[in-house]
Length: 398
Image 1 (cartoon, rainbow, N blue to C red):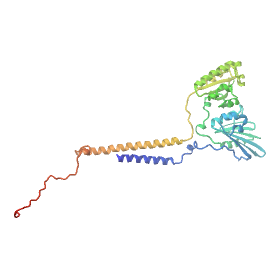
Image 2 (image 1 turned 30 degrees about the horizontal axis):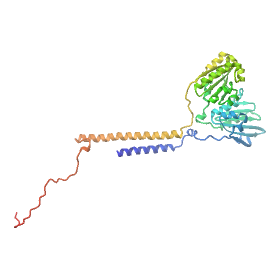
Image 3 (image 1 turned 180 degrees about the vertical axis):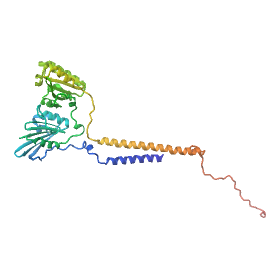
């Protein structure tokens, strides 16, 4: 038994040593990105002939990054901002980069700043321009560039800036899942606005009064325009944590829309300009959808019916294994090898022990040597006689 125990312990030690050596090997690059801290937010001092003038302004306060929109930036998870001025051949350029906690916040801030009707530009993950202003986002960063004069190479210069922006991995690199609930037919992607709070919702042209949405119950919204045959329809989707909350909010919104001119708070500008016959609300799971605009009721209703909630698991790309996962795999590997070694030792014991038993049985001996009396003994059965000595007279002759 001591031999078997020694064998098992040896196998366990060898397994632990092998796995630990494997742990010491370099981890693939795509598996370490999740554990590395995000790259610091910075802007180049020189690029494409543009030379920085003065010191860049760095801040971690939303009120300093953009005082007029500080409340919305906080809702989107503002983390850091930097602004720098550049000159080149008499032209000027101002770059303002805003870093957020994740990709969802960056996309929301980008959709907040981008106005409907701005032409789309191929820069970063998404971009739009307005005269001498270019707005784009990539990863968790939004960049606003203001040129004194926009030239044919301005977009290419901004692509160079976008290439410097890191992309978060893991769950921080995911877009808001609610975007997948937007029907794609007739969708004007440049009118999509995502909001996580009342300031961002109202500032990006939300249809409902913010207090009616229920942001205090962890709601998030997406709004987009659709070019239907009879006119433009605006679709608002609100996502709530639970279907029960969505059901209660749906009833409030439905009652509010039916109140018309008596509604409190008063209708927003978007509701006032909508065809009252086309205003409709519908719930699907935790989603509440509202259609507004001037499209005919049949088309508005058809658009609303296309919103459908389907529960699905979302895979998290990239990131590799965490330290906890690697430790658990190490322990599971050791345990597995110990079980294999223990099983092999038991089978080996049965094989060797069974062979010895068979050998003894064939020789006519008991199965176990416990029943044999094998002692070393001395044969002391013969008696020892003392020689006789004659006391009187001569010793008798042979």
